Every structure is written in C-alpha cells, then in structure tokens.
Length: 632
Image 1 (tube, rainbow, N blue to C red):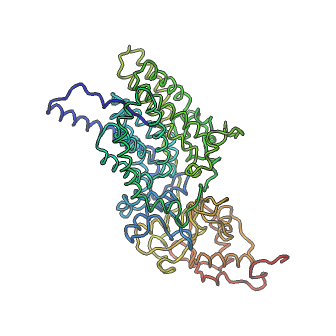
Image 2 (cartoon, one colour):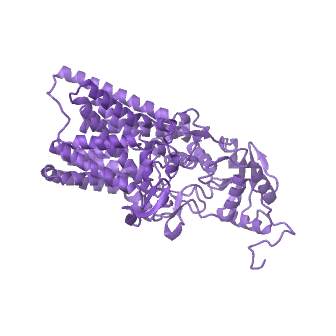
Image 3 (cartoon, rainbow, N blue to C red):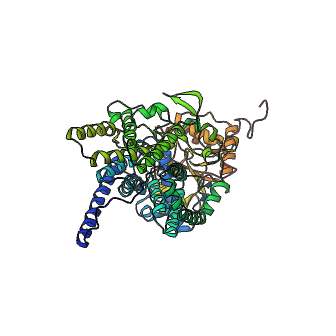
C-alpha cells in the first residue's frame, strides 16, 4: 500500500526559466488529461445511476444507497438548523441514532450541501461516488509520479489499478465511505514528506487535518491505512541500509507527529467521544465478522462486474455479498506480481530492496488478515484458526470486517504494477521483450477492467412528501411512518425523509430506520432497532404478501408499538421499493384496513391518522384486548 524512495524524483539538470515554464505547462496539461481519463472511468462505472439519479438505485445494496442519501440530506439540515452532526433524533424515534458510530461522511455531507440543496441527495450521491473513484485513481497516480516511478505511463497504470481495483468497484454498490480510496494516498503523501522535509509544523498540521477528514469519511479505512503505513515504515526502517536514514529523520518526524496528534485530537475530540462513549454507542460491530471475510479462492477469480466475468471467469458466490468482494484479482495478475516482485528485488540497489521488502511484508500480512479468523476455501469454512482469530476481541479490530483488508493488498499490487511497468518502460530492451511484457500486462489487467455497476428501478418520491402535504398530518418534529417501517430491506421511508431534509426547514421523525445501534448480542451493535411486533407484521405483509387474521391481541400490540413510537400518521404509497423488487401493496392495504378501517386517499398515498394509545381500537367479540395471559 505504501511506496517510498530514498531520493527525490529524478531530474537531469535545472532547466532555463522559459524551458521550465514550458515544462510546467506541459506537466499540468498531462495531469489534466490523466484526471479526465480518471473521471471518464468513474463515469463509466456509475453510468447506470447517471442515466436517472432520481429513478434508479444500485441493484445489490439499496439500503446503503438510501442511507447515504439520508446523510447527504442531513448535511443540509445541519447547516440550516445547527443540528448536531454526530447525533440525530430524526431516526429511530423516540431514541435517536449516534451518527458518529455510523459511517456519517460528515465532511462530504457538509462540503456538498449546496449541491444537495440545489439538486437533491440523489444527484449529490452519484457525483460523490464518481469523484471518489476518479479521485482515488488520480491521487495514486500523483503519488506514484512524485515518489515511485520515472515514466508517466507507469504512474497512470498503477493509479488506474489502485483507483478501480475490484474491491473499490464492489463497494461502489452503495458505499460512499468505502469508495473514498483517495484517503490512503493523500495521507501517505504527507507521511513520506516527514522524512524529506524539515517543515515539521506544516507537515504535522496538514497530516492531522487529513486524519480528521479520513475519520469523518471512512473511519475503518483510516484505521487500515494507518496500520498498513505503520507496518511499512517499521519494516522499511529496520533495514541496515535504511536505518541510518530513519535515525536522521527521527527528530523532525516525531515533532511533526506530535503536531499531528494535537491537531487531530482537537478536531476529533467530540466525534471520538460520541463514537466510543456517546448516547447510542456500542462495542464491536453490528455484523457477524466471520461472514465478512475473503475466501482464499476469491483471489484467483475475477469480480462479477468485469471483463473477466463477461468471459465466464467470475465466482460471485465467493464474496460475502456483491458489495464486499475486496479481492478477486485473478490468477494471471497474482503470477505477474510474484514474478515482478522477484525481478524488482533481484540485483536491486539497497534502496529498492528496502522498498520491496516493506511492500512484500505489508502485502503478505494483509492478505493473511483478510482471510478472517477461519480459513475459507470455495465457500466452505475449515476449522483452521488464522492470524485474525486472536484479534476479534481486540479494540478496533473487533469493529472491523476482515475481508476489507484486501483493499490494502490492492494498493500493494498497484504499487508493484507501477514499479514493474516503470522497469519495463525505462530499461533498454529488444522489441520482442517489450511485446512480451505488454502481453503479460494485458493478460493480467484487461480482464479486470470494470463494467458499470448494475442498477434497478426504484419507487418515485410520493407527491404527499414532495409537495409537503404530510405537514397537514404531523407537526414539526412529529412522527410519521411509511409502510413498512424504514429498514435496510425497505429503505423508501428513510430516503424520502432525506429529500425533505434537503429542501425544507420543517421535518418529521421516523420510527426505526437503517443504521447501526446498540442492542446486539453480548453488548455489541446491531443493524437497526430491536424488532417490535408491528415492524415484523408490516414487513411480512409487504415482503411475502401475507394477510393477517387480526384479533384484539394483535390490535393491542400494534397500539402499544405506535404509542411507543408516538406515531401520528401512517402512509402507504402506490409503489414501495424492497431489496427484491417492489413490495406487495394490496396485502398492506388489507392489513391496515382490518386494523384502522379504509385509508384516506391523499395525493398519491393512502393515509391513516393515529391517536397514540387509542388506535387501533379493539373490536367487540374478537378476543381479549391486551397482552395474552397464560392459557388464554
């Protein structure tokens, strides 16, 4: 993931003033062309969303897509009202949600708030997703061009791989945090400056600000980046040829790190408190860690959205899900990297050997860690404990998903590809050998060229919400819910709230929602709020078409849940998006009619008013109105 050289970028002689200005102009022009190439690739990957940002969603992760749209809408709300950016009571009524313990992307939400206000969270989402992918590739290109290689084409090749590696394309299914791969090269750039620059105050200040930004955008990615850089620097410094250089740079480096800690600590004091000890915080993660690991066989195949997959060389079942396939490099690329590592190490000068030794240690270590606590091979888990097993109860590691560590391996591979391409392009060689190198790179990399992220249709925003008609049924800050309640599998209610956050001062609150919160087993987190009967009833009706035979016992449970949430109105649009397509509308209507009577047709929804603690009223002759007693 990291690169370093013992010298500054190579230069033959200082150019004359006019020649220097021309050279700088040509350099900026080339950088601009590379940036446009990266943007073009980013647009290609996200083109399905660009076709209709308002009417399309990612096919494999609608819940996260809606959640990040909600965060973007909340960014506008924060600037408009001065609300706490790390805690909200708009979701999960009556308790609220700790956003610092979730992937809050606070910096991006605030930075893009003007665009969100003008164009909506739907447009901001696809803009940020595109910029994340393109910016990652461009940042890696700049890093390689500045610190690692002589030939610009090698920097371009390495940058494009690092920015559009299979793991980043997989996370483009809904994750605005995990597609922010530019965090790693940006931090790495300033870490490398610590050894060569004496401006320790400036370097420490910038690095501290970058750490604060990285925590806000993708805390888990920042953790992996810091871990990888630490392993790299320690390994690089331990060499006999590099230890004297490390010692000479120690004083200014530690001074800069002290400033970095002070700046980052100041900026992150409140977010860190909220994350670890604030209301709604939790230990561990809401996900089962053993389910989110890399199958060792996945390293040998191609990702499901790639040229290789079009050739039938993909195994999507080897990933935890379509948004968590972080490896999938393919056997040819792994062979090229192994051979390239040997060639770059063989007969190299001490500086290059130190670099390759550090890269190899980071690559092998993170490959092993990405396999998780138990060894998996072609979807079968074997009772073979691995390096991550003792780390599952260690703070920070207990909150991470091991499979994502393969994203660090992508950085190591991209660095090796850039160095190897630079060697092939800069060393004199006969034409036949150059053609063989070209064929080897093509065989390894062409099958990994990504294809666009798949999208599907989603339900339009109801006029009831868009026109503000909901304000006639609940006061500002009142609780209203769509059917079924918002969740990862039925995110429409939450994303419709996101749109009101982006354009209106008055807001409604929602029961439940899609987020990470407390309430899991053994004090760990969980996805969403602990389930209640009404949540299950509406979800079952919507997802399966089941119609309940409702008696007064069910009415009591629904009445209790609605009173607990303080819901004042319930609405049902004509179409509702679910994780497997549109939900069953008629079954929800029949269940609600049995509970409350016919709904009121308002705009394009059915609305049922609720009197908390009163509705739905019991029906004479339908059994006991209250909790069931034993033997009832």
